[in-house]
Length: 322
Image (tube, rainbow, N blue to C red; front, top):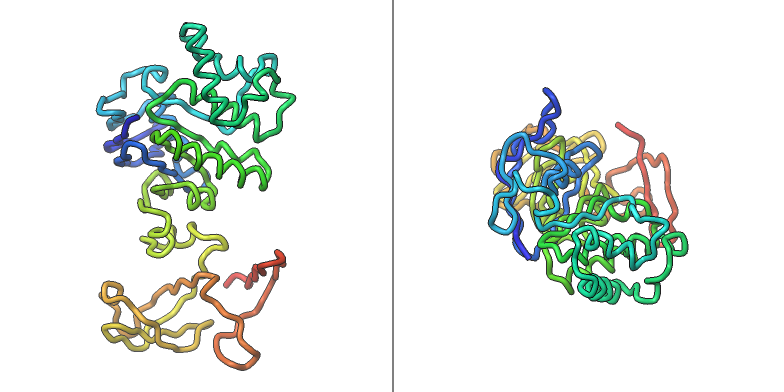
């Protein structure tokens, strides 16, 4: 097992800079999730760590050694891709042991490692089957098993669940959590799905346009987002934003009002009241679970509903854009 350190990583493709000086410390055994919208640089960062992309500037350290000039096969990492990349003519056992055979490891060692990984992933009964005889979830477990047999210091996952249906994604999230608990190996996981990030991560790194917006444990990001981007990205359904103006402030409260928000007092933590002055233009963030439906005419505010989605136990209510 090993920790990982990124120091001032910059990546350019020609004249276009896509990663802007990212520095990050990942502790030994930590499960870290890179999350962000498409094009934010999360997969590029993973490929730089793996050695599949070269950093234009900066340093990559794995297990206390700088690996910028080390080949991917010798970095002590194993990567699981979005596509399973299994050989259709090989059995599960042959697919899982393929990398070890290419590395010319002893046959008995390969057999033992594959058997151990198959037991962890509950694939022992499927070792003689070919990929076409497996479900999507089983194929993804084979791809993970191929990484496990390498006994890496760091696991890298590049959106491994995005090809699965909703039920299988939930099942595989549980299995990945159990796998991390059993192996206690450093894992870095890339996804655009903030639900995966919230449920899997010890630490979440929120990326946007090649920069880190915030680093923290899941509940910290949910309850104390650093900026509007994180507030809007973390949480499903997303946070509601209302334009308001301060009417009156004290040390612990502020009275705000806006076009969709009649004047009312809000409690503030002392640290949040800095620089709040009367007449200041603010954005008020409201989580959906903090909004209650009242009897008609019982209190403000009144909002026009554009679409209501019935999910059985929940209703998602959408208002028209401002």
